[in-house]
Image (cartoon, rainbow, N blue to C red):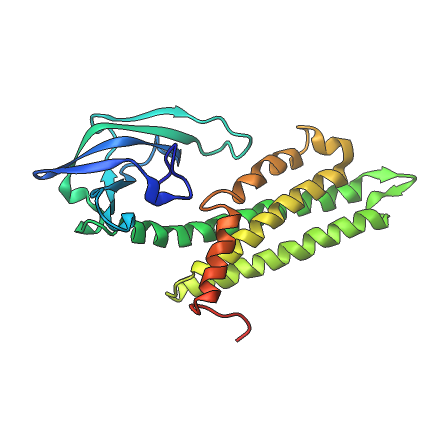
Length: 265
């Protein structure tokens, strides 16, 4: 989806697909594409019609097979954390793709298709955030029981107990919110608001938990000898991926204001 000049504003993408008989000719570039080196095919959001108003009516998803001439993964982007999966830049230079690779077989449905995918993606981010927070909680709790100061484990100190309690409570709330949103998705419901809430809340919990776990570890929290420094670097991505948390707040508010969803009833 993402391009150098189009992230949150997907309607601003510049990658195009021009029909040429039984083929589309793709030109453009993408960035921050996860696992681009391994995706086969790679779904690419393009503009099949630049003249439509609104712009999303001219957007489509086309599946580009690995090895297609003109399709190149140009480089991996260096990152602060979350270094397991690579994030790539992709260049499309006169890439000739069969028209049969148009997702859904109808032009103009690309935005609808990717937004549907983002619902699931946001649940994925929420679950990953819970995982980071869980790891931070376990690291903080275990270390606090092992580390001794003034003749006793630091877990006996009230200041440390307050941090453990805050991490644990928010972690469990994030877990339950993620289960709630996922259960509604499993039931076949639209979950724009629910997945947005889960992603927003759980990712903020992951950031908080990783930082507080570092504080429990003291100086060792800044050392690569312990896992918490990695969690601290991994967590911020959760507040950015699949839509920033500010966008999540807008999605949540619009759903409520427009009466599509409600809370407490």
